[in-house]
Every structure is written in C-alpha cells, then in structure tokens.
Length: 365
Image (cartoon, rainbow, N blue to C red; front, side, top):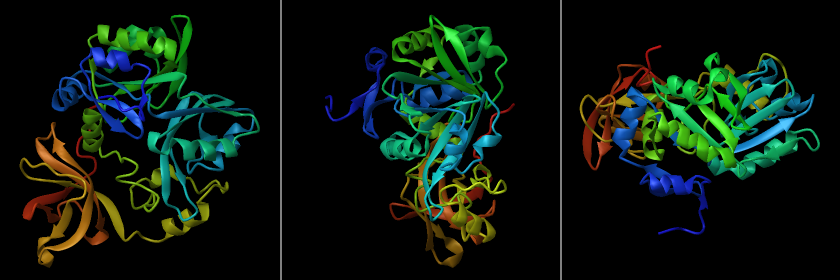
C-alpha cells in the first residue's frame, strides 16, 4: 500500500515494472529488492548492478569564491581539488562530531556539486546555502536522477552507454558527458567497494539512462544489497556507524580532515584537539568464524572479562560474499587490534567473533 507521506523516485514506475519491493527510507519510498538481496549483492560483486540513489540530496554552488565558502563548512580542504575530481568529506559540529558525511565534486574551476545524505538533506542544505556566495546555491534533487552502476563489469557497460567520454575517466574523477541532447555528470565513485560510476542526469533523461543500462545486462539492485555491499567494504553509514556524537578519528575517517592548511571551518578547533589526543575507542570490524546473522544493536562482550559488555554493534549483517556474520562497533582501543577474540550476545547466546582488518572485503584491482 502506498504511503502518501513518502516521496517517490522519478523512476518509481520503472521500479514497479521490475517487480521491486519497496520500503520507507529517510522519507522516501525506496526499492528494497527486486530478485532478492543476495542475488543482487552477488550480481554487483561478480558482474554489474544498478542502484537508483536519487534520494540522495544534490546541490550546486558556483562562483570564483565558491570553493572558499565550501571550505568553511567542510572538513576536507576542497581548495586543493583539481577541476574534474571528487572527494569524500564531512560536515562536523563545533564539538567535532559528524553531522553528516558528504561527497564533493569539483566539476569545473568555479562549479561544485555536493551530495548529502537523504536523512539530513534539509539541515545540510541550510548549512550549504548559508556558506555559499550570495545567490550561488541551488538544490536540484527533485529535478535530477542519480544512478550508481557498480561491479567488475560496470566499466564496460558505462563505456557502451555513455560512449568515449567515459573511457578515460579515472577513479575519483568526474566529467560532464553529452548524452541524447542533454548532459550527464559522471563520477568514478560509489558505495559498494566495487569499481563503477555514479551518474546524474535531468529527470527527463534519467529513465532512458536506466533503460540503457538494463539493456546492457546490468541488474537492478535495491537498498538491501547496497547495505550489505557497503558493510563488506566497511563504509560507514551516517546515523548508524557515524553521527553527531562520533568524531572522524575514532571512526577511521581522519584522512577526510585537513588541518595543515590553517583554513577555518566549522569544528576545526575541536578536531585539532581530538587529533592530538589518542582516541579511547575505534570503529572496528568484527567477524564470526561461521554462519551467523549479526544486527545493529547487538551487544559485544569480552569473555576474558567474564562476559562484560564492551560495545554495541553499529551495523551488522550476514555477508553473502564471505558467508559469515560481520559487523562494526566502537571498541575500547585495547580490544580493537586485529585478532582480538570477543563475542556477540545474540538472544542470550554468546557467539564468538574476532576483530579483523578493515575492510572485510576488498576488490582486486
């Protein structure tokens, strides 16, 4: 049954025709799965899958000083980015907590696109627009479609659909490609641990772009597979693994914080202090030795301390690739080293887990 309070994707009818099962997510009615989460997960790991991620908020800023304004709210020094590149960054609060994680695209010298998480879209845009040059910000989420094509066969499909303009695009680079009378912004980025690209087009061409990738044999994939894929790659999800109470250094995201340039930005002083102080906990990867389903909220216990609770899983799932239970949790630093033996309390039963190197899965390049 349709929930009128939820926003619908521009390609909703296409997802219905592909037999999608829908679920609410961050105010949107989103495709959760089509053929099944495991089937779609494996398609991305072994071939190629396409995700409609149009729920992610998209906003432009422009002007000669746009980069400096964006730097004032972003942890990463975007001014060092060359035109045609993309980089992960954070919005932090004055205490150094992560209000959101974002992706920044410097499309040209004076034009920037920023992608925000759907759950934080309104607050993020207020922050973004307040920092932008006067009259130099525009929210384009409703007018555009964003598709992510991911997997070892993704580049072949992308070249076939988008043509020679895509062929020479390096990882973490972006460009605008003329396609069927319009423009597609393409970036070699993603959220699955696989190669591929994210494509942003106006809503009119978004459906044709989706159809073109399906015609190349790319499989539709939903939010369920996106979550298991990103967890295998140990990519954090805002609202679970990172939030306003966690800081970049304990989350393993210190590489997204630039302090050496001396430029002021929201949270800079707190982040400088946090970097100088060794964290008391770290976001760590936990894996079961056998099949098990881990869930966010499960308690992590230390058998060496009589089963004392030491952390709570921020994310958890059964890994279709590893065929084991995996999860992430903020562990005390003394327990966060790879090889540490711990346990997860699953409905009163202690299931053995081991701290493993991050990420759980890494593609072969």
